[in-house]
Amino acid sequence: MRLILDTVTFIWAVSSPQRLSRAAMAALRKETTVREISVVSLAEIAVKQISGKLTFGKGDAVAGVADLRLRVLPYAARHGFRLFDLPAHHADPFDRQIIAQALVENVPVVTPDEAFSLYEGLKVVW
Image (cartoon, rainbow, N blue to C red):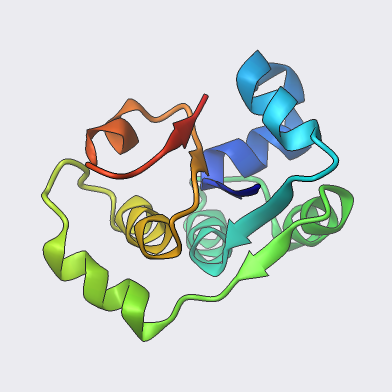
């Protein structure tokens, strides 16, 4: 099974794993799970860290990707084109990109964000 961690899930998994739900933790711990993070999440962390909204920095992100054994999922044109078809359930542009990517890849997203569940066809783990 493949799973995409959304940005907050990634940050929590690295800095405060006790905040993850039991279902999320169980899914991430499965030996057969392919854990992924979107390159969009890395961009979001960089933008928010530079603007002072986040103290989680580049070193934390690099270490987190390695420690959690995450595969970084690139963002492709097909993901961007899917954005045109998304309803406006979520205002955050980074989350919308992750949602579009997950829908195109047909991969569940691990997230506590309830707005993700509003997107038809998107599987959410939490």
